[in-house]
Length: 440
Ligand code: ASP
Image (cartoon, rainbow, N blue to C red; front, side, top):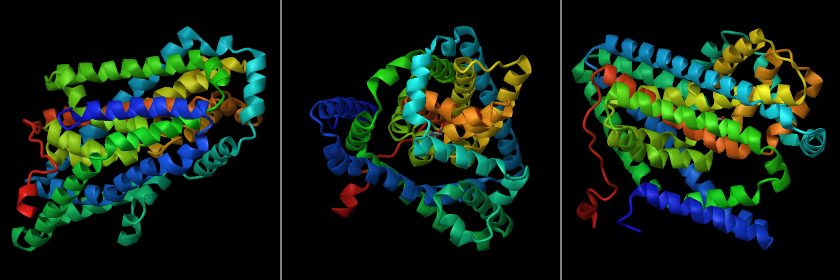
């Protein structure tokens, strides 16, 4: 498979994984997949997570300490946040317009609601999401700022969930490095420069196994999916979500073409390995190292921009998730005859925006925030489990699609910010074996 482009190899791996999964379902091989195939995917995701923290740290410190002027950093930060908020509001609006015109919830029969409720309402995962949402709601408005500041550098670095703390630490270190003068900064700066190159090489090495890993991940998704009849009943709802996500991708392509003046098809080709991994892992956090590598080496975004925009985006910018939340909330309200006023729809825009900022970049996080969105429009607490049960069966496939959009959104915004800052260059990609002959 050496001559094929990486995205084709991954795509073949995915198709083979899905086919294999269906064959295994036919021969009752779900257990075989769980015992012998799934671990390959799990190891791959663990490897990606393993390098996420060192990569964010090294890349952000390098990015900031390469800036000649600290005020540039403020300008990058401000543009990033503003564009992230704008794209998220557009995503939610697309979701709301689609779900309100197509009304997928109106066609759900009472039998389907009863069957879905009976199958999923007491499911521990549904109950867990409701409990998690109430834990998150109990926090005060400025808690997120407090949580962003670590009180122990090593504990921040030792927990992948504390991504914002790592970003804070790296920014603080990078800015201080700029201020100590060149002589004192040099040894530490050289260290992080080198660490950054090494970790990016680790991404290349891990990606060699990507086609096999996605095979394992997708075979496992297929064998653990729910009753096909229930999936079928939710086809219209799923179609509306997927249609909205597709429109969002088209919107990014227009932005890439109009603002950055790059060919959108070229953009898709360069970023596709990250998109396919986002789809296969359902986690923007696990995909982050690959997104960073693709955006820097294949799209030509300067590290000064990508090292900030991408890790921040993986945590706070989730256009796909917010679009999904808008559609899911209205779908549940339609199916359970809960009337939503125009003001309620505006509340959904605001809460889905905040919720997507607060969502963790891991599988299924969007559903936790959906509970908060539903509660914000006064949805009765005793019906929450029924509401979630309605959409639970298709959550995983939709999670895969929305994560792909989340990652594409981050890559698009990093290109736009780079363009505005004059930091979009001709890409220079590195291969895993560039220096191989020196060591063998
Ligand atoms: N899985 C999504 C992500 O990692 C979050 C979600 O929508 O559940 O981006």
